[in-house]
Length: 635
Ligand code: F6R
Image (tube, rainbow, N blue to C red; front, side, top):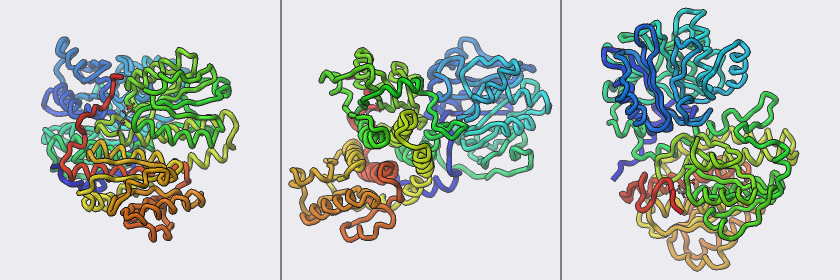
């Protein structure tokens, strides 16, 4: 059985918020063959991204490199066929694409204009479009679509000025906005590797006569367990015998030294017992990433991946959301928000049902496909059908370059990073964020909301990472609840309005992980039949709408009373300050105060934790539940 969570360990060593999208990065300087150390490190980090990989080495005043689209195995095969020269200084990258699809050209490392520096990057540089335009005006020739190449060119230009990679990195970082970890080498200086971080992870591995850099300790754990964690906005220079940390302004700074006592497999999961639990705890970062770069300079919302003109978006007279499973529940939440904000009629349909009922589709129908993997066959077939009927298709997807976004007219990427646990958690969370952004964007384009109203929702979304973090900090209470309910053989979930899809999601998580009967109902539906299921001691989770919509809350309380009167044990999720709710609850789980439409962002977190915890206690494989697969690529 998996050990219970050590929740405090995450907070202990992980700076918060941990922003920046996924991708794995490695750096090495020491006596060993850098190529081997870097590739081994990348293999340990491949869970962070696996759509392309690359390595760069400093060899006789030159950068020698190779990079390939696809899994690390493609790069390894290429290097086995055409070995790179020997070198003891190198960097490497395994990519989870953000800017630009997963191609050889977009794979890292990226070189500067003259090829003197090589750089790898994890994160999103928000002002890259402005910087790129500036470089192009100055005659720079950029070979990829990435924001990283822009940073590499800037770094090389600064290196020409300063003559030293550390000072050049400091100067480059002062020009960049967003979230980034950068790691670079200078062809003319094989003694060092220089890295920097802002809102994106980076740790230094402290060896004996050798030093390492990695996105996390998994990159170097087989060589050393002594590590140095860098603070925000710091630059680090590693040589064989020294590690020097500064601020972006060049002032001396210090990292935090610590000893890693995990084994390799735990290190890949950042010390968590399950990928799923790790992914639940990554949600604050994932939400922040999903929101990153969505503002134009004039404060308006921008979704630059949506390659549809405002005129096209204004002609839409119906939206149909297609998705399966958890993504379908995200779609149900989206319907409430999109209809409320845009007044466009919005249907939500299971992808596998959609195509076979001859749906009414026209050129002015927007079909929104929600899919974490981007490979779900049912959803893919649904969008193919929609496009045959001339409808426009927009994908909300987490996997850059996957089939669904490739076959769509537009895409909003959710930027959650790879989701390894079969049960979707951060995928769902970021699908919600993307759906809200889509609703607000349509409202902006069609003028159904004032700019100030849109700004207020965006600001509230910006608070979600901290609110979710607060719920995660209270996870031990959910563990206790799960321990208390170990014997439960059936659990019900009730919600109203957007709380209804949350109830469905809570039930699905429990079914797929704990293998027990679980059902979600719209609370108002109870009296039309399901109430017959209630019996003495049956646990019923109740998602109470925020008080702002008084009527909804009061109706929910009626439902809670109905089940309590029949012996149910109620676990009530209610917002802070709703003291009166205690009278209706056997257990109260407090949620941060948010507006009604955004409540799913917080309400789902305790339900995810509960399912993960109960399944762990029952001794189940949380990451790979029986009978399930992560990507369902068959119809
Ligand atoms: C449940 C779960 C599944 C997926 C569904 C769709 O935890 O993960 O229900 O949500 O199979 O998958 P995607 O989003 O990849 O299309």
